[in-house]
Length: 451
Image (cartoon, rainbow, N blue to C red; front, side, top):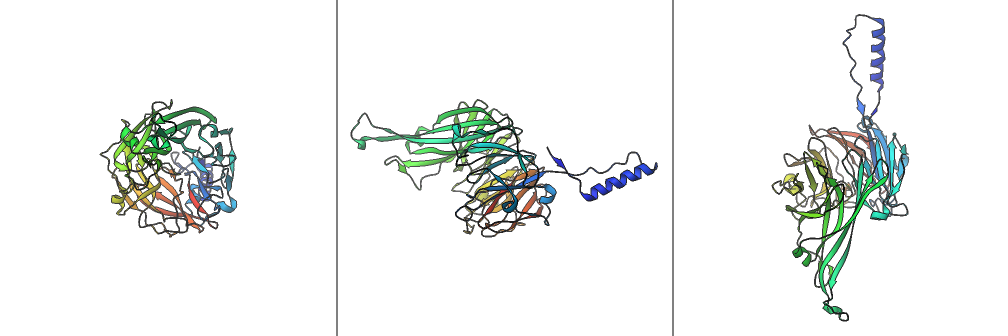
């Protein structure tokens, strides 16, 4: 639910208008007062340093401001000093309702790992726990990879994969030298969670196979993440990362050929009938890292890939649940760089998105490679670096998680590791960028997004 705030000028106008109306019969009965602008909570998250600058392992603190304050450069926000501690042993995995009024959290690692909690956003450091808690650890472990599905804030989904190398002993029992590697078995687990009532909705496990040729060469699915619903709501897409062993030694392989990007598809809501689809345009991983990696737009799902030898792509999965290999959107080409790597991204309803990335030209900062933001148009397949943002060498975005979307405006956070920065607001219709509130940082810490 949106919160409506009256500023002092608007309030004075309304009071003056009311007085004039009461004292005069000459005012046009059809005269109306301009509606007071509605606002949205914008929640800012900071990841505190653990042992090393930028590791984010010291915990996650969140702080909420109105969208007006978020845009105001005279406002200062200091979550590290004044914020609410989001329960998590390491960096919390946060999600927000579409209107920003609710924050969802599942603790990552430690004694509370896997615990789901929900908070009503009330401004500042006030996040009021609501509803009951539930643990998904029995299903997907204490360090779950989870996401909120775009179904009206009703459902979350978490996933895991476990692997086991399969060896054929050819009927022998004594001489291990006769053992022959056959393939690596990948077992995935998928759970769906009722976010409103804190209930487990469904849980399924499956062995997911690649082609016989790929398995014989030692390829297997080693990580999965970022479940995404299709437009029809009857399929769940899960991003995947491939790894490889040397079949002769069953040791991890290096420098191998990167296969076409893959996605696991399950029936939804049953989570049955796993299949794997493969892109012929993009190569590399589709599981992302800590930010949502795929979004539905106009009937198709658009998905980022990572570690692509030709630079990250945005891939398209059509309504037929197959990759649309005619949709060629390569970030290297669009941005004029080499080695583009999509770290996080988020589209608005108009098909224009803000995208965080690094590339081969990024300098090596205090915590890792320097990051940048670009404005992307999914329809035109264009990407333009946003130059109105300050890019310090220590501006680290690998752990970036969230963008707040309000209509066609996208809110993001900018601050180098251990240094102050700002909120920026991108109008995706016009490309205009507003420098907003100051973000007060702490030694070795960094900001991981807006919700």
